Image 1 (cartoon, rainbow, N blue to C red):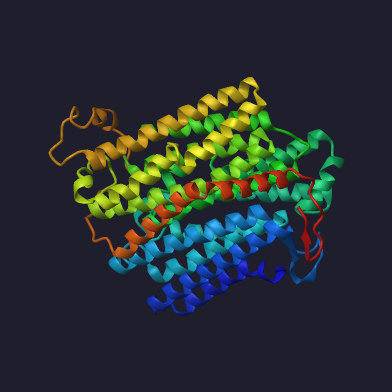
Image 2 (tube, rainbow, N blue to C red):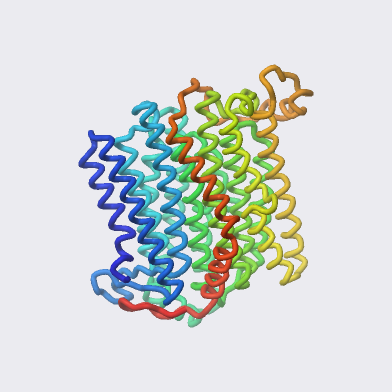
Amino acid sequence: MSALVPLLVTIPLLGAAATLIFGKRLRLQATVSIVTLAVVSVIAAVLLVTVDAHGAIAVSVGGWPAPFGIVLYVDRLAALLVLISSIVLLAVLLFSIGQGAADGAEETPISIFNPSYLILAAGIFNAFIAGDLFNLYVGFEILLVASYVLITLGSTESRIRTGAVYIVVSLVSSILFLAAIAVIYGALGTVNMAQIAQRMGELPQETQLVLHLLLVAAFGIKAAIFPVSFWLPDSYPTAPAPVTAVFAGLLTKVGVYALIRTETQLFASNSIDTLLLIIALATMIVGVLGAVAQAELKRILSFTLVSHVGYMIFGLAIATPAAIGATVYYIVHHIVVQTTLFLAVGLVERRAGSTSILKVKGLMRAAPLIAVLYFVPAINLGGLPPFSGFIGKFALFEAAASVGTPLMIVLIFGGIITSLLTLYALMRAWNLAFWREDDDTSDAEAGGHTAFLGTAPAADDESQRRRIPVIMTVATGGMVAVTLALTIFAGPLYALCDRIGDALLQPVQLVFADEEVGE
């Protein structure tokens, strides 16, 4: 099975090369992209079953042992995230193909989109299976270079402006990460994660703390945690709908994944859990208050994205096996649900010509299917039972209550408030954009919300209404089905996440050559 591990990265890169060769044959480009991501999904599923039954797989690329060679490492966490990511990437690709077929190169130049998209996928997969910090850095840079292209597609003024902010913030994060790698290598003589974990205890606690905070700062920017989350709500909403969806679903989770490895394995003996709890609370509250103040659907979702990263940091800071398992489940839930909501908003934008909840109305009558495709993931993200959002949050709160410190109790109440405000923001948007009829123009008829939102910023100017190809609706509906599957199959999925939580808090074993590492 070890031979399958490098294919998770090489197949998307080969697919990207093929799409460049077929640059003028758009149908062939699309076929190559779909087949590429479908093959990766199958490989990831096979690896997940294998590592769950027999233990993690480590591959030393080129036969070079650590600390000199590149190590690829697939355990349950990496395999699960690669599988979920490949499914999400495939669904968003189908959505983008429908959009491109309808609009041509007007908004999303297809010949550029496909190779950039596959390179982005390769970077994400490489980050998830990296067994050393430098290869993790390479994965980040691959996905960031591709994301620079994708976020500025169409070259509109707003996309170039927000893309520049995104690039500057990403470069700052990369510089911090590279500096941390250099300092860690100087102190420990290796960048292999397993060796770092075993040697870290040899350093004084003060030195460990400095290294720890460097990595948390670098990964925290990528994950958009408070106070370095300011860049996200302005950067994501201006991109094309499929780009925004995949960015929202996956890019911040790569940063959260890196934080999980940092906290559970690299610095297990150097705790900053109290700091992380404070950051988690601030991230939840600041993000959701930003969502409540918005009048534009993409910006509402971008702020809720920030606030829900706070739940993941909350679970990570609890630092028990149950909490880590709940965090992994919540990450899977949020990748799927957040992506689905952005796809649904993309349909709203095409149907109504705007995503401002002050301008859009009457969609329940005009487009009932879109109403359903928005409503189901919205109440899921808001945490209503019995959906996966409720399951994940309840598990986090239960893990925090088992610790029972005053700060944990504060975080539980903060999480409940954040969930209620998330539901309020999303249902207010539902009320105004879907339930309000075309002739309901007064503040009283609109529920009194328009006066409060009248000065809230919008992401883009109003655009013309456009035809919605069937494939876009099918892709969004498929993602809604996946969100429901997270609830229907919550038992086995949560059991897998529990096993991940237990394994992550076990002592890390050395990874030197091709081998299976029992967990």
